[in-house]
Amino acid sequence: MERLDKIISTGGGISRSDARKAVLKGRVSVNGKTVRDIAFKVDPTADLVVLDDNKICYKKYIYLIMNKPEGVLTATEDKRQKTVLDLIPKELYRKDLFPVGRLDKNTTGLLIITNDGDFGHTLLSPNQKVPKKYFVTLDGEVGDDLPQKFAAGLTLADGTKLAPADIKILNPKSTALVTITEGKYHQIKRMFGLFDLGVNALERVSFAGLDLPKDLLYGQVRELTNCEHDIIKNAKKTLK
Ligand code: URA
Image 1 (cartoon, rainbow, N blue to C red):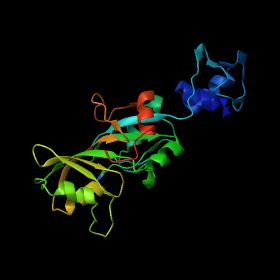
Image 2 (cartoon, rainbow, N blue to C red; image 1 turned 120 degrees about the vertical axis):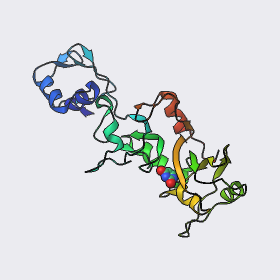
Image 3 (cartoon, rainbow, N blue to C red; image 1 turned 45 degrees about the vertical axis):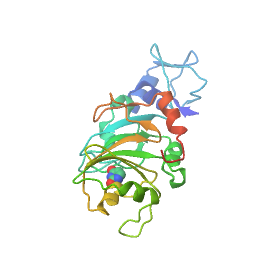
Image 4 (cartoon, helix red, strand yellow; image 1 turned 135 degrees about the vertical axis):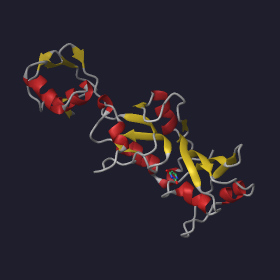
């Protein structure tokens, strides 16, 4: 059960204070009866809530996909710098949204943002081995020995042992597709650092089996389709 003012605010895409005013003014009905109590409890899956003449469609959880641009922090708030939450349009914004995992400030690409804690935390859990694929542009050529070394599992400079990773060297050989199943701090940059290769650009092109949609431009965000949501939920627990 949820409070009526919350349902009107999130379902109707208006502020909580405007939602309260609407309820107090008698513009809201529940199952055909006008309700003026902002704290009235509603079952969003069963009750019909109407604001003026518009049926309110309330979703407890929201799942967003963003093509993260460069220069934006993957954080929920920051005093000085822009965060990914600042890019979310008003109609999709909820106070309890959080990014599922982190991309560095200069990394671009696929980022999932949700307010569903269970969904997010399952995807972040190391034992789920959720695959994340990156398109990497390096400051030198990738050696032919790297695929075998990545597959065997690298050990970072600080002694951290990594799970097996997949690398596909592209043309030119300073570019590659890398798939990892962990999310250690600066992981990709540190992996290439072991071979004296610097990362010039990093883009996440796939997450949990879902590819970055070609039509999603930098900075754009939209709700996941049901099909995309299913792809992520059923993400294979194996490297691909
Ligand atoms: N690895 C990195 O080094 N940076 C990212 O943003 C993601 C993976």
